[in-house]
Amino acid sequence: MNFGFYAKVAFRNIFRQKKRTFSLGINYAIVTLILLLVFAFSHGASRNISTSLSRATSGHINIIGDYVIEGKLYKGVLEYPKIESIVRDTLGQDTVIYPRYNVWTITYNKGIPKRVRYYGIYPELESDIQEQFDFIEGSWEDFANNPDGIILAKSLVEYLELEPQSEVVVSTRTRFGAFNTTTFVLRGVFETDNYFIENLAIAHFDTIRELDLANEGSASVLAIFVRDLNKIDRDRDRVVTAMQDAGFDAAKPESASDAVSATSSASPTYKVEPGQEDTVTFTVATLDEVLGFVGAIVTAIDAVGGFLAALMLFVIVIAIFINLKMTISDRMQEIGTMRTIGLEAKGVVSLFVLENIFLAIMFVCIGIAVGFGVMALFVYAIELPVRGAFSLLLNNGRLALSPQGSDIVLILIAISAFAAIFSYIPSRRAGKIPPAEALRKTM
Image (cartoon, rainbow, N blue to C red):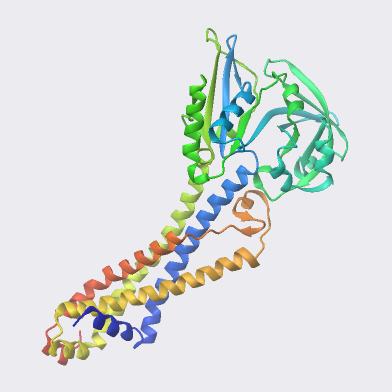
């Protein structure tokens, strides 16, 4: 008897005892549903967080720097136009590069000082940030046309107790240790569903740089955006090599904290490094390195889902043994008849194993279909409140889910293999029963 015969009989047999088939199959479907949703959620969360951060304060590749002048260590990118030129020559002249300057300040209102971090940008360049703002008061144009203008998130305006178009006095301890003060005018108040910019304070690049008393051509960070994220590591390596060839001391980040500083670097008070020669060094970090914490989030999500799936798989093991024992007992006469007409022991084993494989495949497919239905419900129909850190998991108020074809194939193969392995043991017992005994006894 060939495989086609076994497959045909096995497929037919899974419909003979519908109640028992459904009770085991529903376990396969539930495990499939859990695994599919967990994988889709972890991929979606990772992608959504990466996209949100890259649309906020980080590029796909970020260049930060340190430099020592007269024994004093500063943070920042010196003469960034030269670095921009190197990057464009390496990655292409159409490469998008945003210089940004970040400074912590003391902002005064009604005589009360409050700490606020300002991001200095070039408004004419940063169209992507602009598109994420829903202005409650003022406008982007009003901000862009006034060098003394700032725009603040609604939460910051409430924190500072400001009114639109009001003057804002800010002071900072500059890189040289002296204090400097300037006055901004609030030109816009915005809301956004991007977690990373929902508390943002934005000013003009040159205004913030001058407030910090930094040299012209200085920046806190260069944010670089590449066309193909699959080649981001290669592009970063090319940039590092090109900078080194140009005589700059450039390297990858040595640790996760160095990578994170690529998005959070501000211009602090200098540190004294006695006896150290004047140097300029650069760190070139990719978005994946900056987002090391995302890996921890995704790992935690996968761990919870894996634990739930493991519990369900344990239930499936028990269900397989109970189901097959009852099935074999009920079909003893059938087994004896098949053995009598020449079916070998391994044929009986093959028959029962194939039945469970077909059952697993059928209900895995059902679980996948239900999973896509649940995901469609959350992605297209159910809108969730966008608040706080939970917004990291949302895309326009909808849960960010990203199922992968490779995950679906993996689930299908893994559960089918699981069904085959754990149905083999009881099936082997059935195959060892002598034909005469099978015809007159039950197991």
